Image (spheres, rainbow, N blue to C red):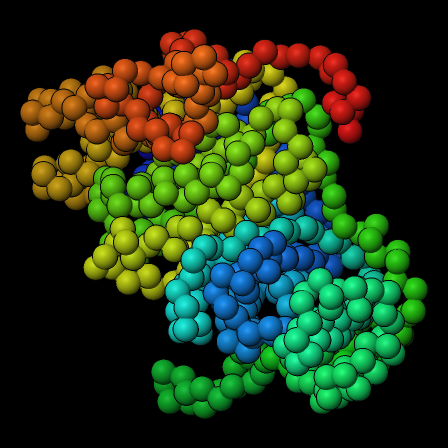
Length: 571
């Protein structure tokens, strides 16, 4: 926790009035009590000015569109039934239900195969309509729910790898465009499922090889596919299950429920409930009777205009891309799952496992730094990862991170059951040069130091000093680093510098560079130095990244800032 600072100690911050300072102090005390800490005040804090809110226009339908990227591999490795596995479909619907239960502002979700479309109400102010925050919270929760519920629905095979989800935000201005969007998605569902049914019919019933089936179906239209299914596979597509032909609609509705008040009186209370159906979205009856909109709509055959409503954010070239992940409401999550205070090594190592998996999956991430419930991933400035599309980058990283976190939960928290699925939000921030990037990383490590020192002192006072939480807050209010060190050494004979480096400095991971001449990593410490542990090209350690020494010994991480020299640099 960052202590209140005097005005002389706060660099690059305008002078505050006494009233503002008093309010700030009260807010700080409240955050101390709940362990929700503000960012550390330091000379590096200017880097916050590079962050953008990504606020979406008001009075527009917000659609979070998610798509599983590795679904074919998922089917193959787990030997799921083609073209549609009923157990997997039930699992995906259960994951959708988890998201719908957590986000009451979602009015409906249309899903099919590996795609999901979550629709937020036009007037929602959730997270003040910040697109990246909405996208990543929904995306990470869907991923963690998928992993968490896998063993309940897919009992024939253990999950081999967590999902990676590609996400995007669509902003629709009126009710007609919402209907058109959903109609288009259901058309995609129909055509994809018809093709898959024909393809796997030829493979499983006619004994064709996949390549032969692909060639047979090349250029086939809807009528040809239907005829081929009937004549060669003895399958009437019209009799296929609606959940596969039409997809699933999870719709939130208000219902009146009779409840008994404390005084014994019977009252009617409005309650939100989610129902699942497989309706035809092209028909007027759905939009007039099931999902009643404010504006009249009609069936529209021209739907190509909808592609212009996707909020595509192409990030500037030759800039460092930093994706920072934070746990959603992790104070409550830690309380519910009995995290140890001031630091729970299980939780930190679980975060590190998730970050390590992300770096293995995305080699363009050259460096990452984690502490508490956050992680920052640095993507090489000349990378073209996900075509530098901001939404795709943050959704891919946060979905894998959340999935791995749940995937390894039981191995780290052996005696603690996961009571509910965690979620994370993420943002991507651009930094124009090496100096700004280093200052960002230094800012996060300074934040780690300040928060951990406060935590250590606070919980030592509570656990060993028999202080109440309020009394510990009063003792530490207005103290500085030297004061906390003095409290620890004088009252508890505890030297703060003896605390584990993983708590004081956080965790650093980086891609090591192998020298072609020696086959040994450049800048690598001797084998007898236990500060680093390398695995598959990724080094994990707890270093001081504020000082120059770390970067001088690893010059390949930041490299040289260069100008474009080939046409490829302008893609």
